[in-house]
Image (cartoon, rainbow, N blue to C red):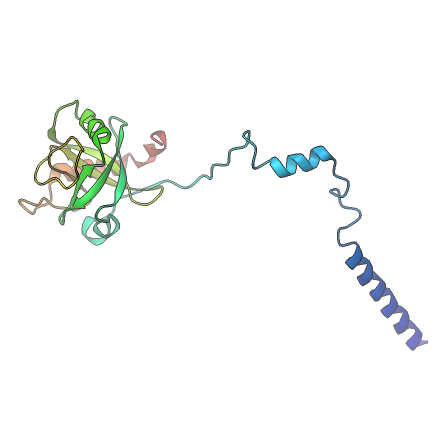
Length: 200
């Protein structure tokens, strides 16, 4: 009797396994009887022009020390985006050097004009708070001046010389001191970090 029971159990398990192999999709599934319209919608949901997928990548603004962090992050010859907070204008620069802070130049004449427009069309040593993008969606509070000086490393930019971007605790090249006006602009940029979503 016990052997017969075991035999029937084995037969039942074998039959169930065979049915599972032949019919791997559950017969009761709501997707078994899809219409042509259902299949079209499933296949084209993420590919149609009506559906544009845009991942909500987190945007952050940090206040990072120039010597400890930013000098390494901001590579020489790296192209980066700069957003002027008070005007809302955006331009792109290359870093061409700098030890105590970043020396930069606009990448072309068009970006030089945007940069100059930030200062009302005239070159100026005035400090302005900005956000500098170092990595996608990762911005750092910073400060710029708008007066080209020294050597120019990029041709055909419409600007003779380079300008400076200062970060937390960066220093000037001439006096090798922390510039209070630049640091005030950096602090302003960080204090207004939550407003960056209005500029992107």
